[in-house]
Length: 188
Image (cartoon, rainbow, N blue to C red; front, side):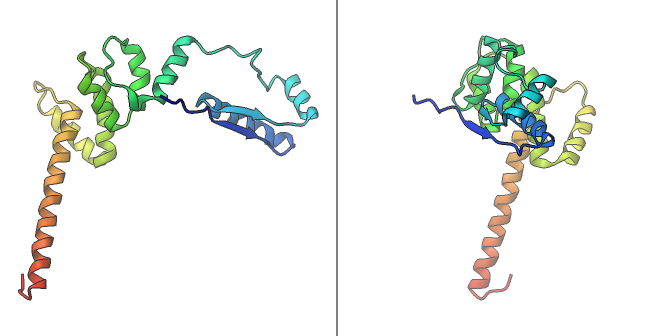
């Protein structure tokens, strides 16, 4: 399997000091996302920034832990993850929120251990994105009316998606019939 080359960005802020700090902040954000950064400044501004303690170079910066490196690698490669059986729940709490709907579905279907404590809030977010915040609030209120029944957002999402698909299919069928009737010269 071929590995992707690490992305590389060259940051060249305008030499004024008011431009360097925002460029440094952007560089730090990109670096946290795995982008290799080359930061270009004049010698004068480099000395000023070092004296002010603004620039941290690899020597003074604490290296990432092996666990953090592994978590980042997994997040970058979620499209290849299947079962997560045996992975600590604390690590999964950091990893699974980065999944797409399809990735989360695949991981849950291939994993034997119960992930619902982590994935149920994620499915609620998918539900909210798909059907809106107001509808999600309505469903949450209705769920509270049945305190002895356990609902999962994954199941609610699946059922709502199926119902929506049925309605769409019915609408397409009605439009098709109407179009065919008009085309045949017959009124509705």
